[in-house]
Amino acid sequence: MEGRADSRVEGRTEDGVEGRGAMPDWTYQPLRGIAGALLGVRRSRRVALRTLAWTGSLPGGGRAVARLLGHRHPPAHLSGTVGGVAVRSRLGAAVPPEVARDAVRALPPLGAGLILVEPVGLADVPLVRQAAAGRRVPLLVRTGDPAVTAALAAHVDAILPTDDEEQHRPECGVEESRAERGVPRGERGVEEGELERGVGVGGAECGVGVGEGGIVLPASPAVGAAVRILADPAKIVLATPALLIEAGPGWFGRVMEAATPTAPAPSLRAVGRDPRRWPGWWWGLVTGAVIAVAGLVAAAVALGPVLLWYDRAFLDMDQEALHAVNHHLVHFLRHDRITLAGTMVAVGVLYLGLAAGGMRRGWPWAREAYLVSGAIGFAAVPYLFTHGYVEPLHTALAVVLLPMFLAAARRPRERPRWTSRPDGPERERRRALTGQLLMVVTGVGLFVGGVAVSAVGLGGVFVPSDLEYLGTGPDALRAAAGTRLLPFVAHDRAGFGGALLAAAAAITLLSAWGWRRGESWVWWTLTLAAVAGFVPAVLTHLAIGYVDLWHLAPVLFGMALTATALTLSRPYLCSA
Image (cartoon, rainbow, N blue to C red; front, top):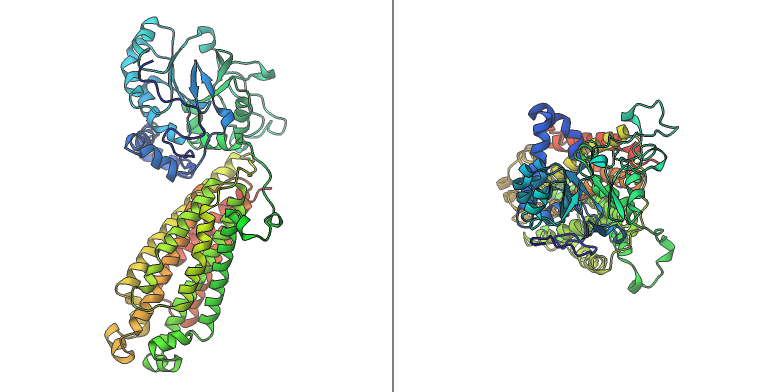
């Protein structure tokens, strides 16, 4: 047919991007009640769909959605044919004509491998033609009207006949498991005990047959049920608008993830001693360990002498001389350096978690988070040289870490080795989604803070609360301590800003992409990183008497958000 979508069966998305994006359920589920109250339920849903459709229709929009909202790729066994049309994934959506145009643009980047528009009458032909223009996945229609078939034959990929008896059959009954009888629906797990429309009680098929197989419209968002249906290569699973409203658009990604064949994760002992054979995740693990140890060493220096020999040589001053200039100055330098050290430990912990918990198990998003964070961190290294102070240990650390980072980046990623678990009680999952949203907000806030700290380090050096604590001004410090003191302080602050940017990127991406039931390493990684980053910063401010509440407010707010997020998410993430 003319205008047929490219339907080559490959393990790649329609944009050529390896991976599928899942719309973040952590925005959809926690915020849909608020959006419904402000805009009305139906209008808020339509606004969300149209926003995604507009984004997907932009040049590179589908690629951006897939890149930014997580990474999934349909396993090869999900490919097949529907109505004689080859599809990359037998997982798609069935929508009415009035929303077809928006669905065709919005749902493929979320993981839909095909779109079925049904039922289509003669009055719906213009809507379907609009939807078909510029589609990236096969578009099928169902109609029993020969006039509709003639009008759309050249515009869509396939036309399926309407079986009136099947098309209008009431939804099949839902059989409850013994464990769920008497349990309110909102508290049930979505993985067991609910059969899909298309597979009725006793296994009788209620779906509409297509060729040798059948189209199944699940009545429940149970991921396991959809995976079991897709195990039959003749079956096609299509999500209805009602299902996506209940489950969230991330349902496509969860199903594909659960349907991906996996193998056991490699043990740490299986790596061997030859660095030439080390996998990428092991290089990531070593990188994280080196950064964490370097942070601990920096903390020991800050708690002890504060200045090393090269610091004293650059300043031409020691601790006593600095104290003579301003009795708060040594404490101020210590607080800057302890804060930087805590952030370095946090970055190391994040990389250790991403490598051992994520990259080792083949999660593509974990590798992406590690690479993005590392690229930001190395891009910030020139900050250290902006003011003419080349610190030997920081320079040596960057020189040692760069080959490790490149080795992790160049090694092929692991094959899928994760374990997919049921989502469990829906109420628990939705609390975790709220925690996930708060954690992402925290990561974004930290990134904004990193930009602000970098700007201070590269520009004015001090913020007003710093000068209030010191009880002096930049000109007085310059006059008393010489011209090198301010570049020295700025060097430390610029380095802290770069480290904070790297940590924030890792936190944001790990939080946005890593929330899955039973992935306890995600919770522990974020918890330990938060302790390493927040606690030393607050304690050192209290210890030196720098307790300006406006200055500490972002840190305290970040701690509150993180504690709330991790408390809400712990039962879900740490479930056995």
